[in-house]
Image 1: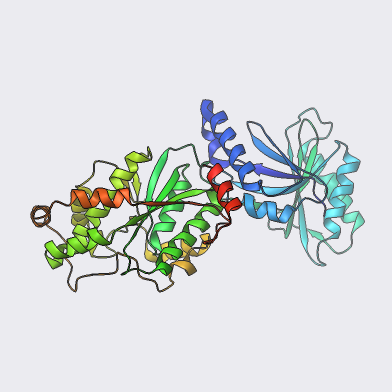
Image 2: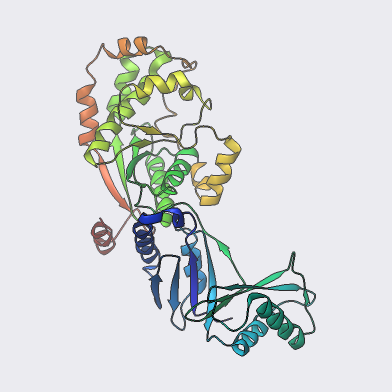
Length: 407
């Protein structure tokens, strides 16, 4: 079937009342960004839905693959727009039906928003369904659980017909919910946390703590690839890579062994807090999951959070690990996350880390050394990469210039 439109349904943002226009405009912008490398289309959006008009030869499959990743889209359907006559509707429904397998069942589902159309909903269902049955001998009707649901929308301008509904990413358009800083390790959880907050309309920049020579370039490349995968859904993402070696070594020199994990994460939070203000963000996001490891108990989180007044969002806090793994597989980060390259969270790990740290004790250990110069040194030494969906470690100058323009 050669389609001439893609129908985009909004979902949750239709509940936004007087602010709906803001959300629709942002979604239209995000859709255009998602489709930007492709040719042969025009995006038209109104209050209720969006239509993408297709030129002949447009790559519909690739467009649908891109659109279903855009947050704010509930579902999409390739559709055909036809003139508003019963004869034309019958002919197109028959074309759909002739492509179905022998023994399949179908249903005609009519939505009539143009109440002045001379046939009511029931008459249209009965007449179009009868035309299909008369023109084919390999199908039967099943109104409860059909193999194929031919949908007919009678709107003011035309009739739209389709038989496929492709689930979208849901949520809200990215860019409608402010900016956050995502603490991105090389593990399974943090990329999922990033996707979860972006699904709520939030823009992210990412921060990663790199401790060479204890962590390898492979570990760094792994995080770059995770960021690249996230950018497929939301567009370019800035990745801030923090040189963390000196801070981490000093923690292990002056802090009691059982408290080094707690103190290391406090130093990460101190760096992140400075970066949040530098990039004008409003919260820090991480992939912590309550009780999963020693540093993710309530008392540990309290001790770590104590170094910042910036809100810390933990979208995975109460999920089962199996649910997080499933989400990671769905977004395509799982296979990268399980690559065996250590990040700075896994080096210098004590044999018996404290699970319920006393905040007074960790502050006492840290008071034996002035960490602020090392924290600022780490911030000053940050390497910022502009990661796009086609990012490669060795980029030619033209590709890099294009990425820079997007920011």
